[in-house]
Image 1: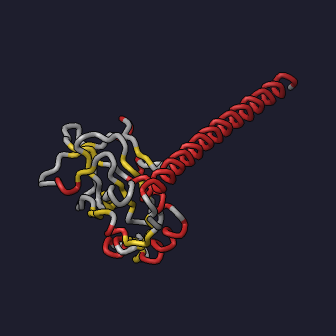
Image 2 (image 1 turned 90 degrees about the vertical axis):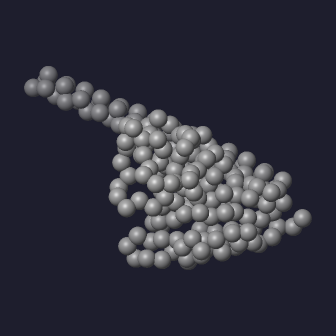
Image 3 (image 1 turned 30 degrees about the vertical axis):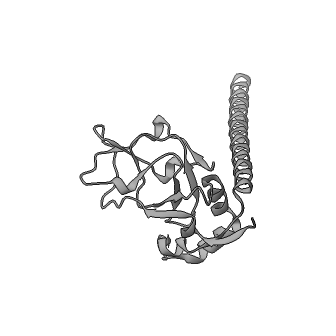
Length: 204
């Protein structure tokens, strides 16, 4: 089986996120977790932590906006249009209108591969071409669904998906090392400066 170029709509269902007329605020009595863009990181996977808790109590039916493990969130607003796979998330969880909810048809495409594909520069360039709006750019759901992507055999997709996961984990580790190095350098510089100031006062 050869790689085929097919539109996203042929290998995944693309649904809008929950429209919100007012700002989403945490409600201690809430029943549904809301996943926001700020909760997501560079990794192709997102796993919920208690720090991300944001509960609301919907006043109307929200069934079609529910998300679960294996679903993909694609950021449709702004110029950073990334895709992320949901890992462990609370039940029930919702995605707001800043996202498209992408449900891969797994007989055709693996979610890990689809996310990797959507993050590649060539596909990101195509997405940039369909963004509209001057203030807050937006990606049209219809236009997004018609973006062509390469779909290789399933076994090839699985290999690429595993490689993508390993590469993002490596990036995360390197970032943690860099942040730790920055903290150490700051503390060393701070301590040295304090020591120099104390020595100066003693001599005076």
